Amino acid sequence: MTEASAAGALPRVGVIMGSTSDWETMRHAAEVLAALDVPHETRVVSAHRTPDRMVAYAKEAAGRGIKVIIAGAGGAAHLPGMVAAFTTLPVLGVPVESHALKGMDSLMSIVQMPGGIPVGTLAIGKAGALNAGLLAAAILGIEDPALAARLAAWRAARTEAVPDSPA
Ligand code: RP5
Image (cartoon, rainbow, N blue to C red; front, side, top):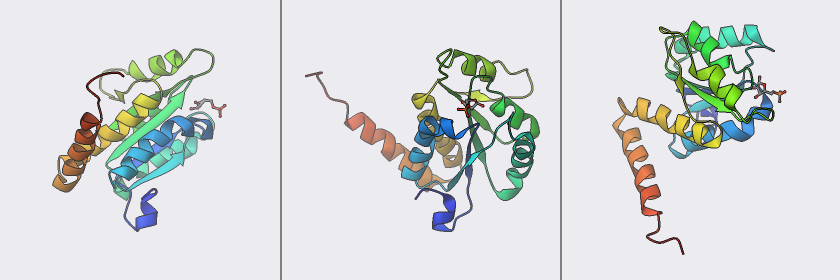
């Protein structure tokens, strides 16, 4: 399953990003959510280029049944923090690796939120996006034992795949 609509289920996780150029990174969040059968949606929502879309998305997400928002952006990465300003849903921020500063700008833009407006900040790039998807599944799994079991199986398979020796 990819988009929630494909299965007719309401999306429970929103995966948003500042640009289509972020998809190569953010697809790793969407792919693991799909692997875990978590209904989700993917949207391009830019804090700078489409600020009205961003405000509407953040304000309406909870009412549409979204439980967790994963927001990825690069450079002056204001999207996760601004979305968090408009919703009390958990917001997981993924710093996308930028060309100029290798994602350090993205990380610093996302991580240092003022007290009171939390963003759970992940690692720069692919690992951060993947882990954001896993964290979203873990959060939903608190109230969804079947999903928690799928997540545990996913993790166990990765453990099983680690070889004893490098050669
Ligand atoms: C940010 O600017 C986006 O999140 C993206 O990471 C970065 C560059 O965007 P493009 O110029 O590639 O559209 O807003």
